[in-house]
Image (tube, rainbow over all chains, first blue to last red; front, side, top):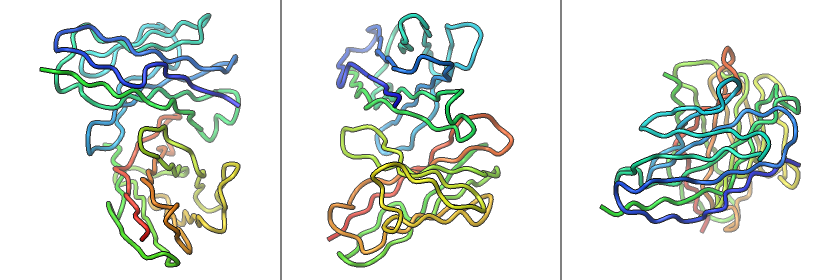
Length: 117
Length: 116
């Protein structure tokens, strides 16, 4: 079965610090990759996604992620975080050639980001 | 666009009773909806895939007779927790895929179920 690993369970930063959240997956075939964010008390929202093409994808609110196929990684980055970025971040993977018609997503366990003002 | 609603947002029920949770796609049609369970500080666990007009596909270890799923229309899926027990207390989240879109899922706000 596919697995998605998010190595950092809780990250604490000060405002303006740079952010990188790790995400690795175990599937060797073609994948679609996602980062979702869950602000306190709100539902999951899509930050960004990678389907194909340029491995560096830009999302909303200044976030970006880089797909490195050789490392099975899709790390999330932001050069300067804000207090409002405090949230839970989830990496998710869809294995394109395995059950892709259902769009099944495999989620990492999430990383809680706390940004101090 | 692509809004998914869930009702109720919170529900408290007594042990042994059943509770129904609705998931609606408000501005798009969804042939496929997903039901997740989220435990505190843990990931989303896929419970089942709901397909409009056909039976749901349950993940391994999820009791289909306990978690009844009905997807009777292109905009509504329901999850009924039957004979609820305190261990069923959790946060239940649904998502939906646009029938004309790709694999992207749009998530509902979740339902907090507490079984006393």
